[in-house]
Structures are given as C-alpha cells and as structure tokens.
Image (cartoon, rainbow, N blue to C red; front, side, top):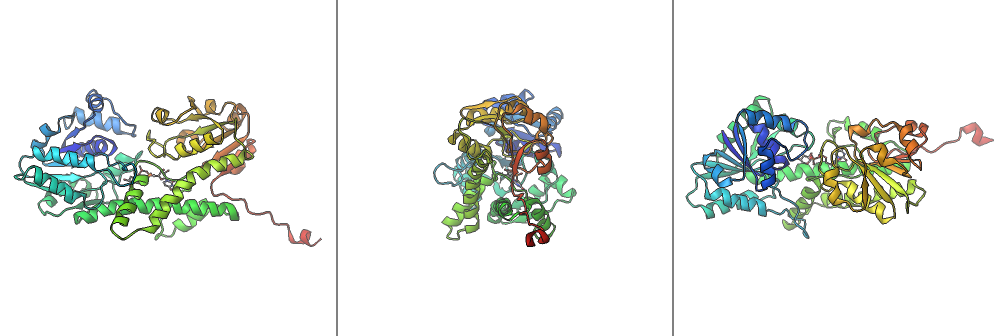
Length: 447
Ligand code: UDX
C-alpha cells in the first residue's frame, strides 16, 4: 500500500514509522519546515523510546520518506491519513478542527483515482461527515471514501501499543474502504488484534468514550486516595483489591497528582462539550474534569502542609516535570499547576526532569533547572516527586537528605516506602497511604 501520513506529530510519526515497518510505502508530511528538515537529516523531533531506530531502519529500506509537499504526495497514495493536531480551542474547550479541515481541502484538490482518506486525529463525532463534504465540495470529481480510525497509543509505549493494540477501530460509511483498511492493518490482525468495523460516528465516539472512561478511572482512585488518607487506609491495596475483579481491572488505578498530557485533558473537555451541545450531558465527565483541576493545586497544598504550612522564601525541589515518564511532553502536565501554586505561596522552585526540561523551560517562569536530582535538592526545604521516572525510583535517600536544608519528601506517585524514607530521616508524605489510628490496647485503656 502507498500511504501518506498528513501531520508528523506524535501520532503521525509513530503510526507512519510503524506502517512502514509493516512493509507499506509511507510518506510523512508536515508543514513545519524545521521538523521535516530534521527528519530528512536523520533526526527525530520527539522523544519516544525505540522511535529513532524504527525510523532509521525504514528510511534505510526506502519505505519511509519525509516531505512538506502534501499535494505532490497525494496523487500516488492509496490511503491518506490525517493525523494533524486537534488542540482544545481557547475559550470554549471545543476541539479546534481547523488543521483537519485545511488538510482535507489540500488533499481533495490533488486526489487521483480511488483513495481512502482516514482521520486518525482524535475528532468529535461528525467530523468525518464534514471532511467528506469538504472534499466533495473542493473536488466534485474525486473518487474517495472517508474513514475514521482513532489511535489509542500511549506516549512512552507508542510503538508497542501501535504494533500490539488491544483492538483496531475503523469507522466507515462506504464499503469500498473496508478492503483497503483491511490491507493496511493485515500485519496486525495476523497478530490477532481484533479489527472492528463500525459506522463512522460510532468510531469517532469510541475514542472519546474510551479516554474519558480512563480519565474517570484515574480520578476515581485519586478521590479514593483522599479518603484513604482520612480513614487510615492504603490506596495501593484498595486498588489491588478492587482491580482483581475482572469487571474493574487493575490498570489506571494508580493514585497520583491528577492526569495530564495531550489527550485526557482535551478529550474529556471535548466530550463534555459535544454531550452538552447534543442535549445529553455526561455529568460524570464534567465532574471528572473539575475534580482533576482542583486536585493539582491540592497537591501543592499537601506540600505546604508538610512544610508546617509555610513555604514562603523556602526552596522546593520538584523532581519529574513531564505528565508521565518516558516522554518529553509537558502538555497539561500536573507539575505546571503544582509549581505555580507553590510559587504563589512564595516558594523558590528548583526542578529536574530526565527528558522534559527543554520543553518545560519556556512554560515555567522563575524556576531554576538542575542537571540531576541531587543538584535540584541542594539547600531545599522539601523535595516533591511529581512524575515516576525510573531514574527517580531508586534515589539514594540519605544522600538526598544530606544535600537538603530541610527534611520533607512528598512523593506524589507513591514510589517510596514510608518506613524507608522515614529511616533516612525524612518527614515523608505520599498519596492515599493513611496511617491507621493508634488504638490503645484494651487492658491499658481499662487502667
Ligand atoms: C492516553 C490513552 O491512554 C491513549 O489510549 C490515548 O490514545 C491517548 O491518551 P497518554 O496521554 O499517552 O495516553 O497517557 P496515559 O499513559 O494514558 O496517562 C494519562 C495520564 O493519566 C498521565 O498523566 C498519567 O500519569 C495519569 N495516570 C494514568 C495516573 O495518574 N494513574 C494511572 O493509573 C494511569
């Protein structure tokens, strides 16, 4: 198959490289001149484990190329994916579809022979209909079908997720698209990944419904964590205890500082808007969004409380800035709100992240960046772990304590054991690991 991937961001680049690895001939297109120049010269604009090798291997084999010339690439293609960004629109939270529609217009004018245009970007229900209308209007002679094929890959595990998905969802309204999409994904369903065909609107909704459900699951365990702290229970054991029930499942039950990233925050908001506009509001997700927002600042209050209610003039070291490990993505990272709230309370911030500092720099004002966790902790009153990078899981706690001025360690991902941290001299706090109340033995109480 000859495939054009419009948009070489996270989803486009990973999907393009993986499809090339399946043996397809793939052209990745982007409007960003610097990005394409970098890719053409053997560089990779994002950090994603394994991606650089995968790209190099397929470029070498002649199956993967990069260009800015969308119009010149489309005529040869059997399938044109649209994987451009759909950021939340400023002001109203709706997904901004202008990049998708611009791409559709440009693709339309250079179609040649029957072509399947596939939206891979996360788009609200009905976008496929609009893409189809735009193409028909721009090029009434065009022979084409518009399909929806949402992508479920996670950053940090993107290649593995793309190659071993739980399912592939393809929404079509025109049967001619079915054999083409079957051919695109043939190597995957040989791997036994279910290839599920639905209507186009259903497929579009599946993506939002899945992400919103996962965001709700994380938010649920975060609220349970809060309760655990009050009643002296352990959220990790609660999560295990409920997750072993197959109907619930153990994944996405790690309590933390709130979800972030390029998908959950914008997709939950977009679903809320679509549901509201359609007269079928989804209150559970409206509440999820509100709880997650307030949770991030609540995490800063937790740090302040651990510092005896005062951080003014004190240094707080923040370890882990990205929204999750193994990515350099800072979009909607909880660290941004937590740092702002700590600064509002008068703290000076020193920060460290293994991969995210370059992206973080322009987003964080008045923050000192350190080249390692111990350097970040120098002279600090408190250390806060926001993201569970492997490199932060096995810190030498006595050494960390040794370089600090204070002794507070707030672990927002529960990666340390309270007894070990306390033995190293820390006043340690984490999420959802409440201390059971001390109950006096009966005979003593009777005395
Ligand atoms: C998500 C979806 O998982 C993926 O299917 C979709 O295609 C894109 O959005 P991603 O944004 O890469 O992927 O991150 P994910 O690993 O899902 O984590 C999202 C956020 O939830 C992170 O901030 C993470 O720290 C948080 N999270 C996740 C938790 O706090 N606890 C959990 O148990 C799981």
